[in-house]
Amino acid sequence: MSDMIDELLTGNTKFVSGEFRPNEAYYQAIAAKQRPKVLWIGCSDSRVSEHQMTGSKPGTMFVHRNVANIIAFNDVNISAILEYGVVHLKIEDIIVCGHTRCGGIAAIEDGVHENYIADWLCIATGAKEATNRIAKERKLSREEKLAVLTEENVKLQIKHLRNLALIRNMHAKGLLPRIHGWLYRVETGKVDVLVDGREDAGRGRAKAKTRRKPAKRSR
Ligand SMILES: [Zn+2]
Image (cartoon, rainbow, N blue to C red; front, side, top):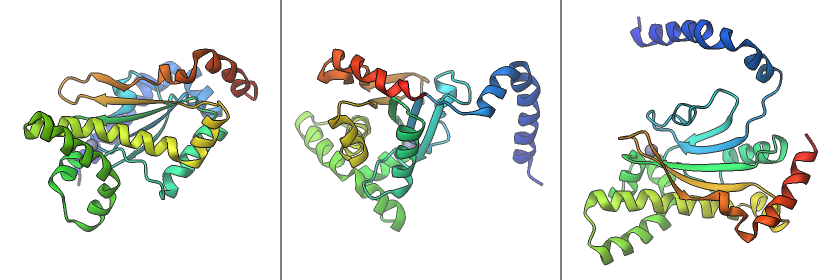
């Protein structure tokens, strides 16, 4: 017996009658073919629900979530998601989203020793080093330091993303995707924009315009 599982199944019945059926045309359209507009790379944390926080319907985002929203060079999982999302689904925007009160971020700060978690969080070492420098200069409290580390981690993971061959080669040709860095505040539900990818066309908006057309043409 599991009350929680019963609750989930009841929730599904309500979803079918209250959301799916009233929007039948929409759900049949996405049933025929998904056309997500965004690739979301976020934390696995149960409080950070990308579709809910952005008021989006299913079908909007192609999603990858892991502990502390990390982008690893040697992670075949994320590479496959990127390739499918960017090359096949032709997604033009990637959002890397961190969040406050992240257990993974606290573990990076505290230095956990559990095998797999420790190995995984090593990929954020650069963010910890940057944060340590900032914390020393500004004499930050633990809370302030965790806030800086959360932001530095998003920036570092975006750097990793830009360095992956797939993305690097696309950007070298002046192609999309745009890359955005967000912070979700679990205390307020609000999103802060840390890295504004709308300006990503930073190497020139005009260039962004010319490169949008070829990307769309194939649809
Ligand atoms: Zn987290």
